[in-house]
Amino acid sequence: MKEIHLFTPLIPVAETISWEALASFLGALATVLSVAAVLVVYWLRQRKDKMDAARILLMEISSAEKTITDLKNSRLIIGTSFVMSTSSWQKFQHFFIADFDNDELVLLNDFYNLTTLAQTEINRIKNFLPISNEEKIRLTQLKLLDLAVLCKGNPNLYLEEKKQILEDGFYKETEWFQPDVSEAKLFHYLPNIRFVSTSSCGQKLKRIAKISQKFR
Image 1 (cartoon, rainbow, N blue to C red):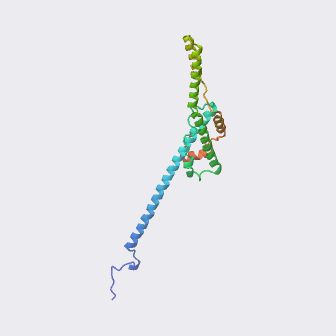
Image 2: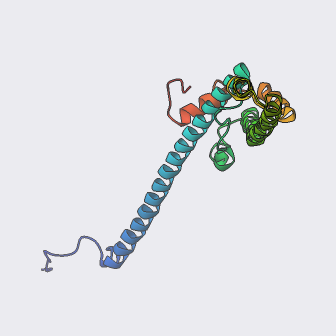
Image 3: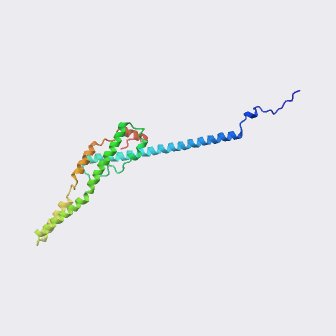
């Protein structure tokens, strides 16, 4: 009679999974999961950076458009806030190349180029202000010297005329010296600046920045 072994293996020994193979598989799986985790973190970081970049661009664009509108209406340069204090488009444009078509990219490039040129002319005009003040002081001093000669022996008349000269030269002044060339360039640039915030490009930036309400 043939002897029967109650504990005969159901799977041949050659087909069993070795501990070495299992450890190798788990190591490979861990490597894949680690790489996947790094890629997810990188993707989330890039997504946040892109969102932050869109918000920065929208703030710059909104501020510039408001200043441009004010300048076109008032034509007053002194006291004007910056048209474009910082230009972030060159820094962040790589985030958005795939989001905009060619016309939208041209719009953004033109907007930032023209606002930067306008800001350059504003800076030039403002840099002339100290020179203008020095010239006014020099001319006022000459007028007062002439007045002192004319009013010699009449101090009351001198004081009265002096007050009038100072009022006309400083206190009642409504305009200040502006270099004509820079001013002409500035007001040539402004009408040619096409606004971005109300365009399809602006709407895409708002979606990327997750801003649903009107930004301006």
